[in-house]
Image 1 (cartoon, rainbow, N blue to C red):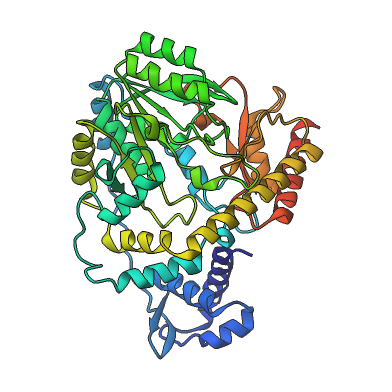
Image 2: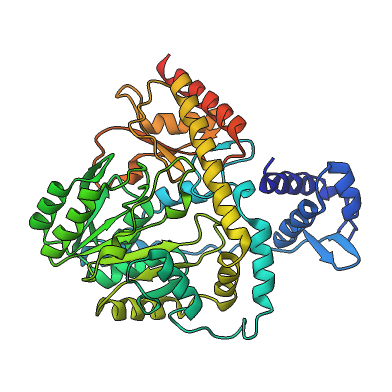
Length: 478
């Protein structure tokens, strides 16, 4: 069982028992709770902390936990109806309304209820995360001289140099800005490169978080269709010509959600077409460290072969480690770097130094290489398990491409199977899947679902999740 599930279940049990104790009454000791519920001491500590945060118990170090005194709450009924007028009035004056739809992002960030198989996640399962290595790195980082001081606004020089080496080519530390993960880097890049009200070209389908950022900035995402070899250059060229856009956002390696890799000829064409249009290419290289063991040599980043500053490169340590290690980088050349730097400083000042120091400790340790090899091996096995289970039990769901990197499979639904109904039915059957609709900036050509295999405990859980999905499909097609 996941640790978070155990914590939630224990908190629920303790919450139901609180009426047995009078206000101020002492709850059983942590040791007694461990023995009664057969959970770890960490689970007991976290469950009690959750109840304390809800104001239901009070914990006293060295003494134990006590039922809190009841608090009188006076509900104050307010009137927020005025906001409807204000917000709609703002939208009426904007060329492109800055709507914020986070549904596609929340689908991958929100943990499903206990007992539900998580095929909609966007991060590694805790068993795949380098928790011990990260804890050791954080402990060492905290003891570094000046670790809690103010870092350079662009990031620690050593960390910038590490990112530059990872990107390769002639990229140097001077071209790199450390960011708080990939999502803020995307937001910074779009704000720097495209003024509100203008179009931005995107792959179709593409990452919902990027679409949400673009729309929140008042930009108009324009889809450019892609296939298993990546975005189609002839359509990209036509889109630049038709829209006058000055930005194209892409994920050339293990694209989310399709898993496509931009082939060599198209890589050269994308940069050439953008350069001819006087446009930038924002390269989101989020999955490079999620390569599977059976993949061949990877193409270098677009930025590594771009001497003219066409490509703005984004890289992050979050996906291959933990959702809480939010350290990433922006790399660019030319005058645009100053604009990126200014927006980064205005938005967040800098990434906390202890987190940067911990990232440096982690990637410089022997455990880093071992972790990446382990993740590469495990992701290959999980991908094979999911693809095999789908082929055996759900052959009617089309799987046009099996990637050799990333963490997801992209399935096309038959026309007779409604997407929204399947997503809802799957959840009732005990498996959470991601709907395909949020991945399209315009009307989708068909129904899709995205299934993640990185957030599950292993092949057995994948088999059970596919079995539940089969149940949901049968209920809709009977």
